[in-house]
Image 1 (cartoon, rainbow, N blue to C red):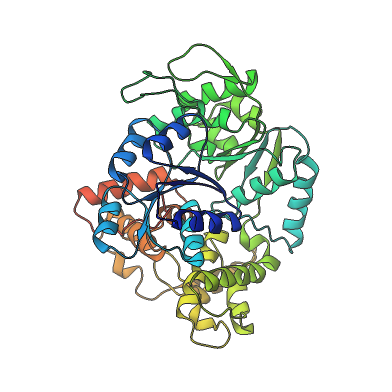
Image 2 (cartoon, one colour; image 1 turned 135 degrees about the vertical axis):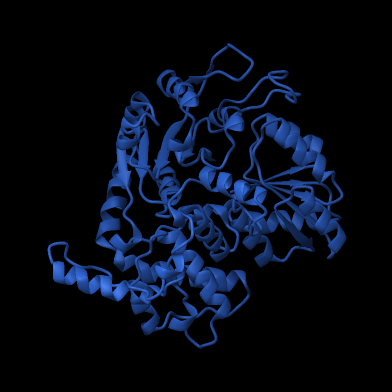
Length: 462
């Protein structure tokens, strides 16, 4: 993770930087927002900017938007000035951190904003086979396409491959194609020249150049607009890019990894993705199994997240009780590892036992039905088994409560309830719902225009 600290914080700036360094971050310090903008334009990229509230945060956020630079901003300031904190959030900051810095708070905020997690857990044979394949292809220069359902850990696998590659000492640059607005994505990828568009006050280095000598991850590449896919294809074929506003090609040296939660072959047939680009990306395909396909990893992952959030919230670490293990193993995990992480976060906060008790792990389906009532597996060939399973999952009255309501109303309630369930985290909610972050964002904008109460976005939740 790369952290940019902006401003002079009366000696606390070095403390915050040291904490970030101890947590494995790479830190760059800029005196003010103008210097920070200059550094970002020149390819000194960052995953998050921590900015002193004395700086003009609103102007900084506006400049980032105008110059098409996508980076979350966290405000920080001496003491607990509520007015300054509120203004910073209103000006566009994702979060506010009081100083002097608390180590656990800094770590938690940075983790939440960047959603970074480098831990690879692979005890299940299904996952061990995937890791074995990754180990084989990591030292090569081949482009890799990682596929799998939302929440299966595709970015974690990408980071694992980078650390095992010959480029491990180079940068690892990740770009979420689904989270960045379409009009900003081209500039993020290829950069732009001064005057290329209104607001382009200087040259800006894009992610391809920023990742030179290292690895560039194009996360959820299937969400990229079809017109931009052609430019990406050229960059891969020619190993060169052209900045917006310039016709001179720039050579780039990157190892490309792409991810998608779609069935890309089907998406190609439907015209949503270029076939030639698909073949260029799919030199090596690594499919990540859903969490339900790797049952031996469920409890180790749950314990990992329980320990992580106990530390982040300053509570004692607890061992998962035997009864809780059974509950976790019997659940369907449609949201995969991301859903498990959210469940364990909530469990840590509400647990009252010496161990993490089963009642603390609240698992519900999209309509609020207790998942423990859902039978996990029934042979497709057994009609009696099918009927029995249908009886087990039946929720008396559930269908009746939907009669007279439109599909649009039911969809709206499902989306908003899921978002509330995910504590406002848009990315996690989209994963659980099985839709892209762009689709979710469009739905929320529609509901907001209709007067609905939209849960506030969590830090890093976009």
